[in-house]
Length: 193
Ligand code: SF4
Ligand code: SF4
Image (cartoon, rainbow, N blue to C red; front, side, top):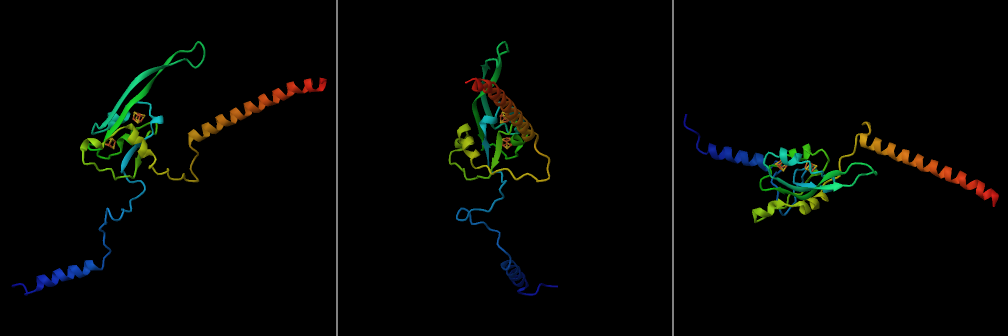
């Protein structure tokens, strides 16, 4: 049967009418900032105080876009007669965001919590070389990292907190004992005077 003249137009108008009543999903960026989830994978921040230069992140990165340089330093023994130790000192830490595929593996594997996701995404460059962010820039991103989500009130206390509390309590008890001992020694002298 031949198509009814104008049926195509009617179908098109029906689609138009149907979509006209739906909420638009178009984001008017950059005039309006997108409403992104707080844990958006925008850019990676480096908290270099936590980095031990273990190289795990650079080794596991599928794109080989993390560049780390370091040198070794000798640390004197903590107590007389002890052994000297050596530690790695970070010289360079850079991520090439023109190669990064935002998989998050580096952040997952870092055993020392030195890498974090920041939701910042406005760092487009006209020169691709500028997309290699060196440690200072990676550090700047750290200040845009959102605070971690609150712990579940029913969750077990993190082992680090329990260990820190135990150490603080031990130190406080030691200081109290020292103070008590010092005041005991001071008392006979006061009596004589
Ligand atoms: S997010 Fe993935 S690709 Fe990007 S630096 Fe980390 S491991 Fe490499
Ligand atoms: S995995 Fe973490 S601690 Fe190891 S080099 Fe990378 S950022 Fe530093």
